[in-house]
Image: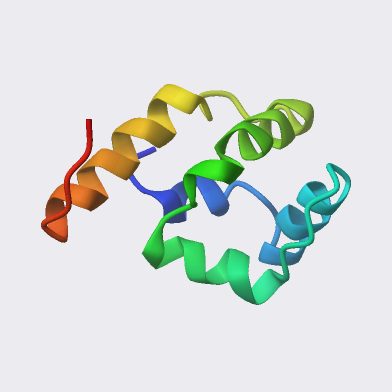
Length: 82
């Protein structure tokens, strides 16, 4: 997986990911999940997304991957990370 969009595409829909997050006590509307395809998944949600992916049997969705993608996105927009 090379992008946040590819990670989100593992779910049947943005609504399905939003429902998985809701099961963890997070109220994230599907429209917000859809925005993450281009804007990236915010850091505070990474562990929850990884757990949801693991429960669905999606291999490879790890915090390390999300950190790498987040750092790459930050570099593209001129941000800093570290």
